[in-house]
Image (cartoon, rainbow, N blue to C red; front, side, top):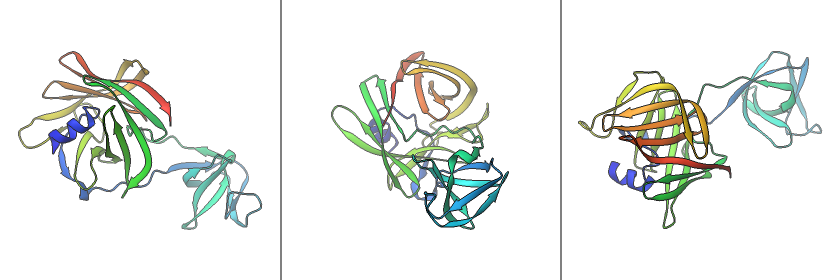
Length: 240
């Protein structure tokens, strides 16, 4: 299955330790913010004409589920979902993530040509579903991230560790089946140049096989090299 996965993704994602898919679940993405006005009205729906559910004082910390284009944030309020005006929230910086950006289409150049990673906007359980598209075929794959690592896999099949968390130099993990070697983090601050741009503070993951993969914060994989030669490179990153 590991070989098949690598073929289907065309080395887009260099995969690691094999695990049963069913054992891992990922929480829905949320963000944290604090109220930065004296009193902030909480509404049942994202409109000023909606019923007021309460008032939040300045400095109150809230969990934000999503932000609307019309300027509202859906928050957790008394164990239920409600809305407040986004402009009166100060968002708290989240811990660095290396998950693929679901608002972007990725185009890579690999040893076998170009291919794209396209978000479907759908989920399987709590995994994000993506398409890996080449000129001749399209395959589904899934990605997820939690406090223990960044993962790639297939629906109802195995998944693999791309990065083991906490991300720190020297962190290592077994790859594939027993005896296939290990991967380890060798840097957290690499600057990687690609045709899609220059990415700073990338994680460098090196496998015993000589494969080195670079992951950028909030972007994911940007480049893979082997024995000094580029295997895959991000050449375009555009909004979906």
